[in-house]
Length: 182
Image (tube, rainbow, N blue to C red; front, side):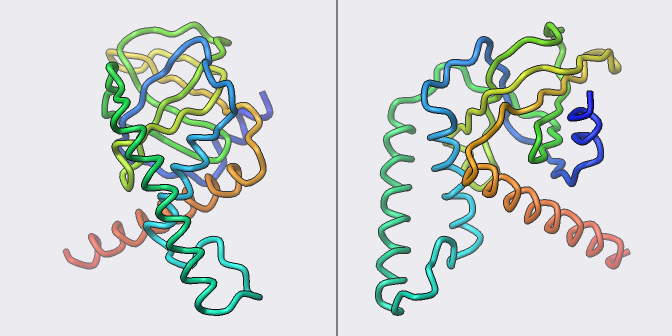
């Protein structure tokens, strides 16, 4: 229950994303594709991601090119394999602890499964993270579902936090710009 409270109070990004709940979880390598997808999303917004200060400018440039090529090849491979079950675009509240979304079908609370997300920066590559449904409540004509992620590997957890911070910062800036335009 403490983690659910932390989820509610944690910094979050709220946007329309493609999301699908899959049960039971089918990840053999926890978060490998998610790690690649978040790295790519961070690369799209921050060209200096992953650089070590001790390297020369040429080594840093080669590292960036190598990282981007690896990510692009993985992306192309995933795109060609396809996903016959496209997720629905819906309002999603994403934070480092989990995700909340609304849907029309009821899901069993306590069910272990997998959240499949597609980020705005990389809509063709799903990010699949193992999670547990901790809350399902009636909301309007549907259900508000909240799933908390299983413990994520350190690097993936850091990338998720950085991505959400950047997305939240962008949303705040857009809201301020919208108020200033009136």
